[in-house]
Amino acid sequence: MMRFLLSPLRRFWRNETGAAVAEFAVMLPLYLTVMLSGVELGIWTLRQTMLERGLDLAVRDLRLATGQATSHDDLKDLICKYAGIIEDCSTSLKLEMKPVSMWGFDSLPASVDCVDRAEEVNPVRSFVAGEGNQMMLLRACVKFDPIFPTIGLGKSMAVDGNGDAAMVALSAFVQEPI
Image (cartoon, rainbow, N blue to C red):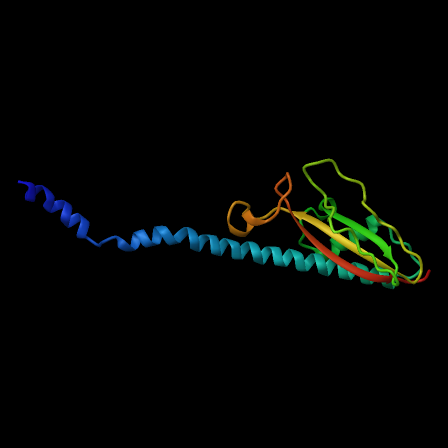
């Protein structure tokens, strides 16, 4: 009688049909995490590249426009125009520019001041138009929404209170004489 009851249990225990489903169920989250992290990294790299391109082209225009004073808003609009794909660029971009002595170099502060879209807009941190033949440092910081904020790379990004991550680009140029 006991053998009659244990026989179906033994057959069930030894049956290997469906073993691939168990491996699939274990490995699917890992594969999805790697794939979605790859997409997140690709989009982040594209955004970062376009931010640096926009900053470089705007600084080039700034250097070549001798005799014309460029305001903060004009420079911000130029960067946004050249960057292209950065969504909501005009409100999420923050610029910081300061003159630097070429003899006693002091860089921008290590803490990057970005716009926190969850809070009130902060005024410009420091934007000083330089004099002729003066070296200038310009830092642009943009906030963006990760595509997959709860998975893989998007989960490991440092975010603010609104769930936005930051990208930073830095450029240096010499202010042409007016």
